[in-house]
Each structure stands twice: as C-alpha cells, then as structure tokens.
Image 1 (cartoon, rainbow, N blue to C red):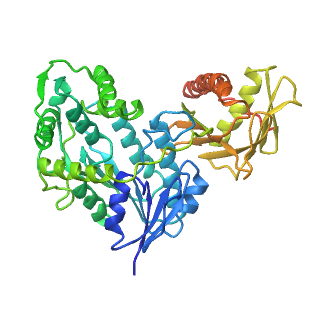
Image 2: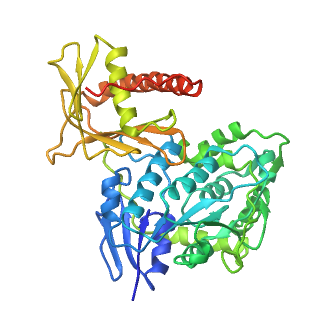
Image 3: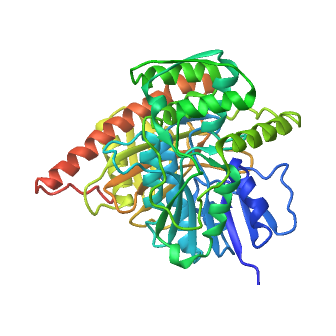
Length: 470
C-alpha cells in the first residue's frame, strides 16, 4: 500500500526534482503558495497553502504519513516585508512542526547546510538552518536532517551565482575566502539522499552530512567551471577576507537580490565538509566537472522554454519581530502585555480596550477605532493569533480575508515572535510605507525593550507584573 508524503516547497528547485523521484513509490501532497498553473497528476495532488498560517498548514498536511521541509525565506514574497529571513524561517518551521504533530505524521525530512564543528561563530544563514532543525523537532515529531554543502544544479542559489561570476567576469580578484573548502554534490545525488531516508526509523532524530567525491576550494570550483564553459579566466589572489566587499560585487555582477547574496557569501567563509556521514547515503560519485556539465545543459533547456511571468505587485504587509521573554510566560501573556503597554505608553494618542478576548486600538478618542482584533481560536501557551477584522486603518477584501496579528513563543527557547501577516492597510500604499509601517517598527522596538526589562526583573528575582485581564 502506497504511503503519502507532504512536501513543503514542492514547486521549488529541490522540491520539483524530489517529486519526480518520489512519485514512483509514494502519493504526494505538493504544497505551494499558489496552485495556479499547477495540475494534479497520477500520485501528485497540489494544495495551496500559506505556510505562515498554522491553521492553513495543518489543513494542508491532512492525510500524510511523512513530511518533507524544503522551504527557505531568503527571497520575500512581494508586498512589504519587515522581517529577517531568520525570523520568517523560524515561524514557518514552527507552523510546519505543529501541523505534522496535529496530523500524527511519522517523520519530517529536512534539507539543511553542513554545520562546521570547528567554528564557534556561524553565519546568519547557517545559524538559521540550525535553528530551523531544532524548531522542526520541537513538537516531538522525529526529524531526519540532510546537511549539504554546495548543491550543483541549474537553479537554486549558490551554484548559479558561481556560474554567473565565471560567465560574466574575464578576470577576478579572489579574496581569502575563495580558499575555503566545501563539499559540492550533484543535484541528482542530493535528491537521492533525501528520498533514501524517508521512513528509515533508524535515522529518526539524526543529521547526515552529504557530499560528492571531491572536497574543493571555491577557487578550484571557479577554475573547473571555467574549463567546462571553455572560457579563459584570469584569477588574482587577494590575501584579505573582504567578505563584506565581496557581497557587493557578487550582487552587482550576478544581478541576484541582496536578500539572497548576503547570507550565502557570509557562509562561504566557513569550511563545509561532510563529516557526520552514513554509509550509502549522500556519498556522491559524480565528479564536479561532470555535475557542472549537467547543470549547464539543464539551464540551457530551461532558458529556451517559456519565461516566467512577472507576478503582479502585492499590497499586503508582513512584519515579524523577535524578543526575549521571561521564563514560563505564555503567548497570551505577551499579547495582553503588548496591548496594555501600548495603551499606557502611547496615551492619549493611542488607547486600547479589551472586551472578552478581543482588543480595540483607538486614536485620541475611543470612538475612533483604528483596528479591531478578534482572537481567532483558543490561545495556547505557545500561540495567540488575532484576526484584524475591523477599524479605520484596515482594508477588508471582498472575500472577507483578514490580516492577522500573532504572538508566539518558540519551542525550547526564551524567545517570542510578534508577527503581522497579510495585512492590507486602508491608507494609500505610498503613504502607509512612509508612515504607519515605520511607526510600527519603532513601537515594536520599544516593546522589545519593555519585555527585556520584564525578563531582567524576573531573573533578578523581582515579580513580573502581570498584564491586566480586563
């Protein structure tokens, strides 16, 4: 009897390759932000899913036996995003972990990066990958993590950047980080490693490093990529790190967005060599040059096909901020503390009122309600979500879709997130981005300081003042 696997990030670079192999043995629930231009086929069912919504994610995972998490938030999805990729990834991972637990899913398979053991300080990208791994396992569902260095394929992130540098620069000044060793692996072998661990109980709650047959420096990879392209390149060694400067010229030459280039280049200063390996899993045999030839051939095929249509501009807002929290304080405590503090700190400009579990935020006069927020479902210790369903400052859609203000405590940590999702402002967009959006960031920063002081008081043995309940 075929089992079912749900894949978050199914329409992405890795996900689409994984599905082609998995569908031979499993039924697949493929999750994507939009299912437009997606058609179900034998053993593949597409489901539209907003991974930033726990309820949507839980519903989308129904019927699955296993799960695969192949999502990364380095490229924001339209609209206005006031959040780091680390916080977006943490929130999505938390939703996915909770959804898999609610659906009694047996295992989560996760693709991460190789974590260098000898390094005390990690790049933001690798720190985030390690945090996501912890969060995915925070609800008790076993996680099997495949950790890869540079995956060689026509799409993705790191290799296409390297290929563009070789293609566009006749000469390159190579800073010290280009002598860092990494462990490249062909996309086909990385995919096979992901597939091979599905349902393998002996590998539950384990991480596995994978890599190809060669450990190489970035300089060596540039040389061999140039050979495959049949291009002569002048490479000049420069004996300084210049990571920060490198980010700028890599972005300028490749045309890739800052959100993608900065975290990846920062990680290139780390040696990422497979050490925690498992016999028969991800020990690639395809040589680097052969993998590059395949990637470039596939890129040529894709570029000759239809070009991707430009997505229409979105006028929604996503904003996520992270705070330290006092021990054992719930998400609902964080919510009530925020609204109470906002009304006290910003009085008389802003006034807040609570009725049952709902809150109103008014400007100057209680009758001028800027925002009305209703608790969406019963709050838990870890999550309290409010629908932004009324007020002068919100624009409700014809489908009655509403934005959300969400408070959550991250598992096994003393950190919390406050997030706005899918909020559509009533103010003109250009005016909102210059005023209300910036004011929100200032308010969140001030609230973060307030919560930090409460946490410090708790550590010092003082009693933390509870938020009022009425």
